[in-house]
Image 1 (tube, helix red, strand yellow):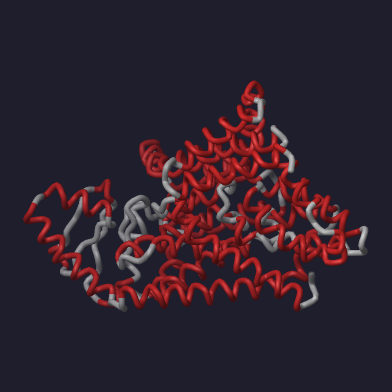
Image 2 (image 1 turned 180 degrees about the horizontal axis):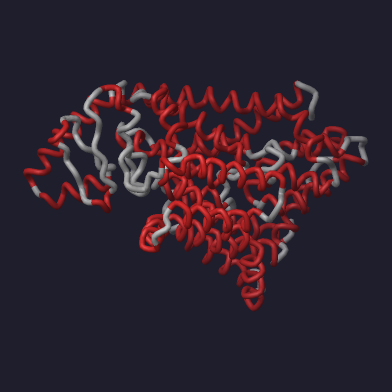
Length: 490
């Protein structure tokens, strides 16, 4: 085993162990661990070049995420997604089982835009207040959303399919369309998983009506209030501020904590949702723009259509879209500044992570660790497995897309696997389809920028999310692979 291969695996293992044990924050770990290993490899002097190259490669992604967060953040502010979210929240009521299934459903629907970060933003801002209110496990939300999005990430405009098509010079439609039945089985499994996780949450918490939850909150708040005014503000900020249901007796908190009064009847569950960071989906929030609803809807449809048709690079589309949305919805400059400030937290978190991840990927690629690891794995495939190369590709796509960027896997490893398969008469189309199987697991990889949007907005530790999601995501991937083999697609 080559020294670089050992160091490559050691670097990834060190990183994962440290963040799962919460010894380091992801940003620090993404920067310091590769820097250290770069010195071990004896390439310390080139660290600067590797990082700058990594940053250069990821800069468009960081720009896209920055402006996508601003764009979709604005659309949430002005109320574009309120009807969809209201529909899903009506379905969920205050039943933990329905809430988890609703999370999977919402994530799957929104994933149709092919962009993980926007999916996570919309899903989390809709569901977070419910999870918080009912004291449900937030890793269940991030796990279900990431896995549902991973299955949908195989859409031809989602990235992996396009990369596989480019790398093997095939048509994206030929790869994707026959895979649809297997992917549907995968999606079905995600819903079944959501059902059982929801059942577990329901057993743990019982089914409460939202009114009962609010009543309990009111009692707790009144006790706290008599104790100290200060703790109310802090406590309310932490647990999503909510008014009581009694009309004039509403407990209001300062604007900074995202105030929202509740309705007075049982039918207002869907209205009674607020979210600290986005001033949630309070039906009376000052940022709503009902008169501009159709403008915003058309702008979003146009933006997504342009993305799918690839009229301009995606970062450019989001930069233009965000600027246009900001100008039309908030013509006054102070309002624009307020909106940008409201989303600055998320933008900084995510773009910071992306640039930190650039150090990690830059070192992995620059030092040759990735190539060395991939070659070691490919060389380790026994000769007798040649005729089953598609199956081997499917299995390998799980660990490889988790530990490598999609670019590294699809452009670096896939062609080698396809060549090995071709020697045994396996068509590159089958190999390309099998290579998509690992996507549900890939979506929770530390090298995927969108996952930082997910854990950041849901206030979940990256290590906790990883610990929870890996087994379920890997199971989803293997079920898609099994379905593909059963249907004769792979």
